[in-house]
Length: 431
Figure 1 (cartoon, rainbow, N blue to C red):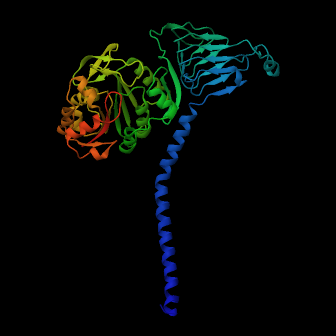
Figure 2 (figure 1 turned 60 degrees about the vertical axis):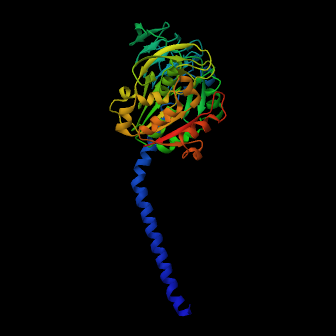
């Protein structure tokens, strides 16, 4: 290239480069300008929501004792004149004030502030008690186990266990009518928030407590297929890890329907949903089945994720639970993702969801456990044929090399996977 030509081209290239950079900068600024209001709104909502879960303490903090399984939200604790003890599974609404500090109203100004007692006005809130929003609790007093304090009430004395009080000052309104306590539980931090977990479980609880999450192909797939505003149906929700994960992804414009048959799992599931204020989550009690009625659910003492309908490999206690179809539970709900983990009865549950599957064509994530299906008395090949008959393509999340094999080989290869009672995989069913 001649020197003269170079002198002409260099400024032209530099000018073109500046124009391109300016164009790119303007496009980026335009996109940011469009997205910034939504981002700011999301941040403001998150800050506001988190602030409603942080209690405040006025006075010596060592005088306050809150059991880790209690939910106190944005309560105000005044410990100036006594101790405050909140026991297991107590539940507060928002804006609750628990006050030990008090002074003689006959004294005014500095004389009144100097008359505040240093001790003796202790407050105890027993296990399972519920104190509703904007209630005020004045010490000394004891709120009994499973008692309910109505919203806006002012408690000035003891509340008997299992009673409902309300008004100013609070008076007995009646009986709570039911136990509010949870099964033996531990409180753990997970990647979807703090959760109540079964204290005696030897499988689900250790994984969530020690790892802080359920690191599996299924949960990774859920993160990939769920979108904000979508609807997830969590069949076999257990204590709610997938429910909380789904609720976080779909956001408050979306919806989660969590279905679980075992009463103890249900109590912890509901408690986990309540503690995170998930108004867009619906909890349904029952076993998803191919017809309505009742079924026998066998209970596993060591693994709360292994309660099963139908025969089991060893003798277990059982209880009768409602059987329901997904078609009747979901009605006209638009379903985007359907997750099933029901210990070898997933194909039965899908037989009760034919209208939903035909109308919504959701993505389906389902466990496939051939040995368990045989124990139920069914043929795992028939389950695979059902999924294809429903118009779905099958993918194996844990072993993509099995996607293209014949069904007979798929069953044989899954049987060979290491597991105490026969191998299993997660199938992604795509419409």
